[in-house]
Amino acid sequence: MKYSNLRIPIFNKTTFLTGLFTILIIAGFSQPIPPDSLYLGQNPPGIIPIIFNLPTSVGLRPVERITISSDGKEIYYSEQDTWPPSNMRIKCIKYNGSWQSPVISFEGFIAPALSVNDSTIYMQKNINGLACTYYSTKNASGWSTPARLLSTTQSTHYFQNTQSQNQYLASTPGGNGDICQLVINNPDTSIQSLGLPINTLVTENDFFIARDESYLIVFRNTSPYDMFISYNKGNGNWTNPKSMGININTSIYDCSPFVTGDNKYLFFTRGGNTMPSYYTYWVRVDALIDSLSNTNFSPYVNMVIPNQTGIIGQLFEYTIPDSTFIDDDGNNTLTYSATLTNGSPLPAWLSFDPLSHHFFGTPTSFQTLYVKVVVTDAAGAFISTVLKIIVEDASATNQLKGQGLNVFPNPTKDFFRINYDGGDLSSIVIEDILGNIVYNQPVNSQNPLIDVSGLKSGIYFVKLQTKSRKMIWTKLIKSK
Image (tube, rainbow, N blue to C red; front, side):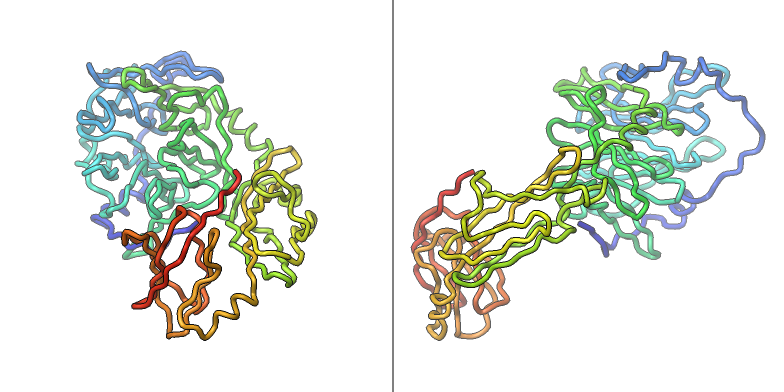
């Protein structure tokens, strides 16, 4: 699902673009950090995460993402009291022959991220519950006063840029939290969701994208609150995200990822139900990133199958499009099967060819079928979706023509066909006996099929403009 054409004026456009794309030329040379002094001189972890000790103020916790300069000599991290925070700041620890005491770089901000060339630092603060990105540029005295990056009513969370000068952020173009790309098209910009399979119906917000855009780590803000990794397919698409595994993902929150420039260490926030349980952890992940890219990818549902209609006594046919499911290992690895959603076999009149993904048959009675279509890859990973087939009685429907306003069938189970020959329809409203509107949808047909399977049994009124007709409703009890 893509989002485009969102008009978002850029705050202080000249400063913004300069901060994003200008490479600073720094004269002179500096000595590298001795290996035993890297990362504050702390003993590096293996494949099991350990706490990365960061000095914090009394009552505050070292949470949210951290960021480390390209030469490893500056470590920026945030500390805060709770969530949402009322007391927060960004600190910096610098190496100058030895690691110095931390200093406050930015008061009132969290979640720092350095640009590729370290010339700009991005951070965020909440304004009326909205995550807003700010930026500061490096100057002779340190950093400029933070300025808001974008003027928008959408969230701009965890802003980052890459070597290709692309900008990514977590935002809400479709209502849910999605990982997005900021597309600059002077004088305007747009926030475009990366779509499936990165983004799902749950909230994806904390994330890290590799500088070369080869992979992306995303935190899904729903139980079990885990981090996943996806790989760039090189065609503008991403692979189905894989769990980072049981060493990294636990039964508590594991979020706020940052990976060092050599792809060696992952830093992240881990904690439970109380703020004192939160710490910054780090773990070695270069081998994990490589190995997960070479293991099986599970298939996923790329497109919803639209409802299909059959007519009693007439041949019904439907072929599932190849684009319905995607397997990053190749769709030729998928095998198809179909049953009813309750596990029962398909009715006698309906056949399914698993090789051509084709349904066919002649229905013999009025019914609504919920068909579960399952695809399984060569490694045994599987995914399913539901095909709804509504079988109608064409002769009875045709008898309704020329009778003004009619509904059929009445009583009904979970849908009805409406026929109206009094002019163009604009909308259909259904009210219960108390006058509460339970359905209100525009229509573009004189013979629309209305799906109201979610309504309770009872008596309802169907209204078109000034006409109405009482309809008795009997709800079909569906098996799970």
